[in-house]
Structures are given as structure tokens and as C-alpha cells.
Length: 142
Image 1 (cartoon, rainbow, N blue to C red):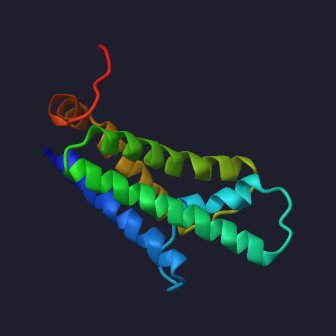
Image 2 (cartoon, one colour):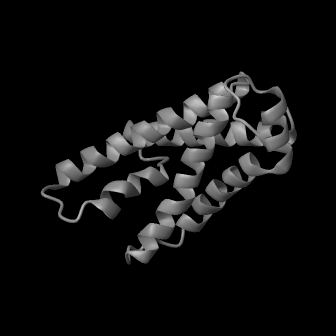
């Protein structure tokens, strides 16, 4: 596995761990996908429903990150595809939040940098070439 994919797998596992730690309420970690309720719910009825929506989004993203990392580590093409989708979503969600006027705070720059690095590592030409040549699963027509 090329270095770019190895780094991507590590970042997927780290994102999964942080997302799941945030869901457990340990006060550390988090996921970009916790922005979903804030962005797409116009009217929040109660704090409990907002926190529940955040927990579901964080748990779902943690599972997706973990699945993508595990599948990629086992040379499955579906893992690379899921990884690209969740990484692209993690890069696009903060942009949507900023466009909608939501203040993310200065510390979010670090999280955004790691999300962008994950997407760049997955879409790097070495990663793409290795994925096309060695990963198992249905291939698309070229």
C-alpha cells in the first residue's frame, strides 16, 4: 500500500475514534458531521432533540469512517469509495456552514486541515492508481 493510502487509513481510524468518543460524552473528540443538525434544521424544538441529532450524526460518521478504514486496510474498493464520500462531506460541511453564517470558531481550522488532508490523500494519483490496480470489488468501465 502506498504511503498516501496508509496515511488515509490512519486518518480514517483517528476520525472514527474521535467521533465515537464524542458520542460517548467523554468531552474529547468530535466529528464534522455533528454540524448537520445545526446547518439543516431551521428550528430546534429543544436542546435534547438537537443533542440527539448530533449524537446520531456523530455515531453514523464514526461508523462510516471506521468501515472505510477497515475495508481499505483489507483492500476492498468499497472502503475507498466510502472514504472519499465521508472525507468530501467533511470538507464541504464547514463550507456550507460558513455560507449559512454559522461561526465555527478559530480552532476548527485544524480539524478542517486534517479533513482536507484525508481527502487529498485518498484522491492522490498514487492512491488512485493503487486502488484501480489492487483493490478488490466491482470495477467500473473505463
